[in-house]
Image (cartoon, rainbow, N blue to C red; front, side):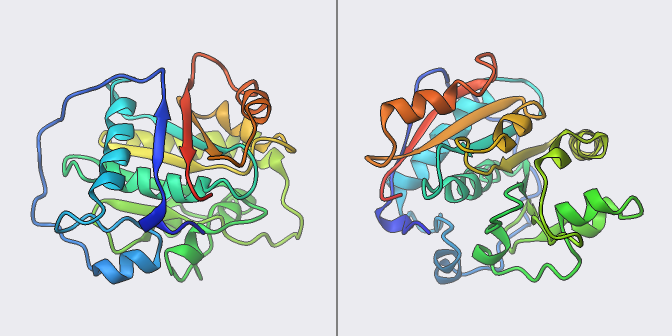
Length: 249
């Protein structure tokens, strides 16, 4: 897990600036203290703390918003294990909620090595994504968990009833239907998919087919240019937004 107090993120090319939409629902407030946010590796964004890191994620959010006038699905895919992809996904989703007219939904799609529920200290006894995909009777609402942060919801990976996870879940009709339903139900909902590593398995590539935008996360001084290029080649260039270099990955 990354120590956010010593991490930096930098975006690389292929994004532009955008303006803000109207502000609404001002009466919502977080139930988490700065110390509790820190425990969850979520950037404390109150009282001007961690301004440089907060602004890095705000810049990424702004560039993402420039790519479309509609709500969209963003895949955050690490090059390899240990790049801090989940950290970036979590905090980029959070940054979207800085604009009080927008909601964010984070979905942990790393079925083999899920981490978002543990990092965010959420009891996921109702199950999660994998349980929904395996059970035709499961309801979408049962998977949505509050995070203690206004307008940010989590769908955890869940636990399979059948043992080994299969990436073919991501190519199923039920997965596509789920994302279409989640996006269309709220016009101000932006969905972030926390992906498994890109190299070594087809999961990230399959998930990218369901996303509108792809962001690659590389560990600063961890992944070689060759690794990054090989990972980027998995994605449609029309969806590929750029690379985030995560320091201290």
